[in-house]
Length: 461
Image (cartoon, rainbow, N blue to C red):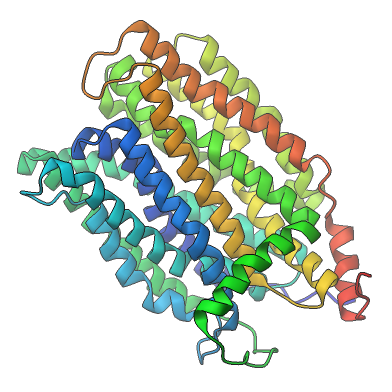
């Protein structure tokens, strides 16, 4: 069987720019929103975590639903590209509203406002992110080329994450010094981030292309009824598609456990190191490492297997988490070194996850005779975001359990508990992901055989 043609550098770079834009929002939420809720908006840690969790639960409906809608879309721009054109301006507006604290709003109403704006943000993020992710399965059907595309994409994501991690604390500090009001500082920073991301999406839309449509337009049907079928069909897909189930277990545990560190670094620098401003470089280490190492992990995945790349990342990250827990970590340089060591390993996970996922589409195609790119990516995106929501809820509960009080001096026991949350929970997550993917079956040879069988109409019994 002949390999599909390689994607041009322009196409890969243009696609990667889309993830740069997505990560302006994603890292803005992941790194700063919990901190913003507790330190600026004035919510309790539990309320902040509950708000993020409920918004993620809402994703449980919207992500698979959006996957089904995108799979049925037919337009002159393609199935998925229209959402990169029309969705980003509304997404940017919702991001600004999320980081705005309305003047004069009673404190008792702030949790409700936070929840409503976060629900709006998550819904519009889904409208853009699910079709964007599904594009990788339509742009090429070659497994090795998808690994390359995932490398490009993760470099784009890393650029967005790096810029957001470095620029946000600096921009907020500068804007607060001008306005004298932390609320206005965060709002102005959100406006700037949204404007940049919207422009990047426009560039992505102009750069990528979809192949000619090879499936007829689906029959018309009620959106509600079809959406419920899509959600219900996802459970059946997971039961029959073992590789997809393993990948989703891995990304759920990675999102649930590993992000404890990034969410709490701001607190550690403020209350343990004694310099909130020093957190910026620490937050930038992970995206910078991903930017530099994405090509390496893509190469490992192609030369060996995607499973091997993931397990190697686990073997590197685990000692880093344990070292952070065992050592004092009261000096900023020590924290930078530990976070750097951890990031060397965890940088593999993003590349490998997005390289594995399109291959599970072919596996399902072989089993059923149908392709469901957006549906698969919709459920994967939901799994990731739902785990992050549960992570926020768990973090809020754990912070309250260890006696954390926003804005107050933290005692030794509270700081010890904070360090355990930051390190031991992620270490457990690394071990669980390794167990989930240790038997992942799809390597390059397996995937080529799948494509041959699909082309020959050799379906699974």
